[in-house]
Image 1 (cartoon, one colour):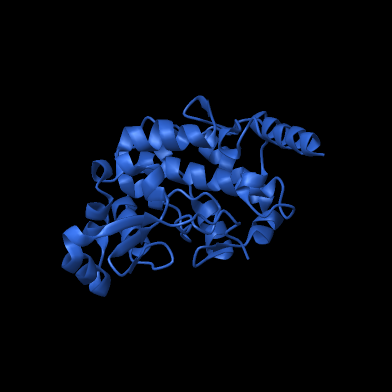
Image 2 (cartoon, one colour):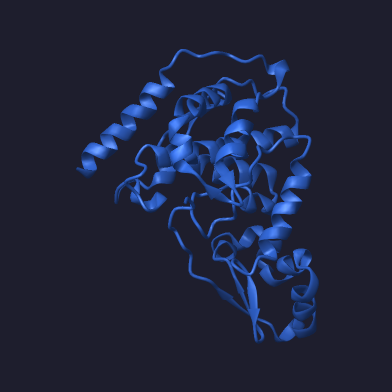
Length: 252
């Protein structure tokens, strides 16, 4: 049965990639109108209505086709970073829909040989990519902005929430800053207990991205209110612990 599911997923992606291209003019930028509407309808406070996305999967596929056929050379740095974040998040939703509602976690997709982030799923910028390529070969090394970890969404409850709007070049810096502040100050993801700072395991997995491993220093940059005061008061006495990661689906 698992083998059959893998074959089915593969066929879905092949059929999508084989669809006739509708090339978008590079000068036109990126058309996010469909994605904007879908996010407004089906993402609320970080909770994703996958059943709703499933009902409008044709529109989601249309948006993915737009991304695939968007010329990237004319995009400036922020527009390009926003493009790849949206690419990652939209294709993650599509990936979940290939087996929804029969899964409880994104990690239910794939096999012992291929995890879901390494499934070849899309072409962008003339390249065939999987999700790991987008995150680890493009977003992290090319843009070198640790706030990207609070923007890409892995469809899981412990992942920084998916926001209800696309990322755009014009608003990217504001969106990334808001994401970082909200995530750092949300006690669901990071909190103090005594002199111990408990943080998301994201900080462990990608420690080198956060002030070259100075995780406490990075958290202090974005901490606010009482949380920041407690961090500053303890300072050198602070200890660091990483929270367990909840991989269950970030849906209803």
